[in-house]
Amino acid sequence: MARIFIFIALLLAALPASAECYADYKAKQDDPLRLAYGVAQVSDGNCDPGSAANELAPRLASAGWTLLAVLSTFGPEGLGEREASAGDHFLRY
Image (cartoon, rainbow, N blue to C red; front, side):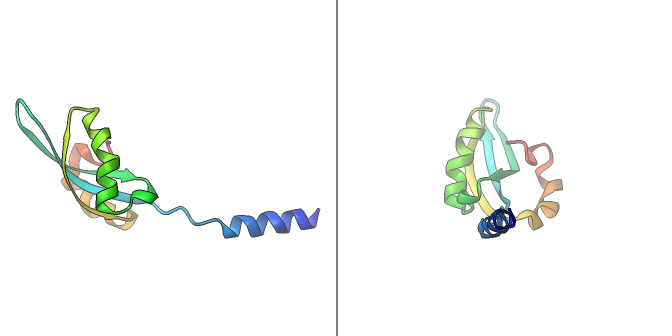
């Protein structure tokens, strides 16, 4: 029984830690023209601007927005400084 617990503990220790990844972006809506700055969580595997754009574009499009650019990707330490600027678009999409 003790071997099973040791095996499970070793297995869990070998798993990669879950990192959080976020992207800040610019988007627009047409007719009338509206521009937005936002912050969204993206998959850990898409934690570079190009991959984040591929993940975010369909999410934004489903809400009527067109992704213009992913400005950067960052970890949870960058959320606080961007929350006020993103307003209603903070972690919305």
